[in-house]
Image 1: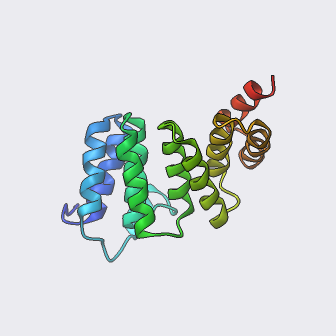
Image 2: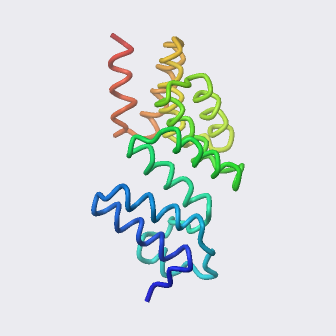
Length: 171
């Protein structure tokens, strides 16, 4: 039985809505997750959704930001990622995702800075390398962008976005 007073219930709801491709409902569940009490025990959640899944507020904020980006609400996503960073300043994924959202929003220099912050915390994060490559390419630093995209592709050989940009930039 799921108790909707706790984050775990809303996290399950958000995952359920993601699978059903119901973005508005997913975003609402993620917002309620952020506002909920944290459970003392997360074993069941991790058992069902995967050992790496977290119920912490920064995990909810990152998932909310990603859902907002997917829904085309980039400005709100930027705020969600900044909220994740406020809760956990050493969270590399939040910085990488902030960089991606800023890049989509056309704030390329700020995106590059966010990605560099992510990479200062975790060098093996392909999302950060990829978003940095896109930001550098957008501000005209093609050589640096190519080098960075190559690193994203090396870390994740199936990273289509990085490989596609490499093909476009290298022509």
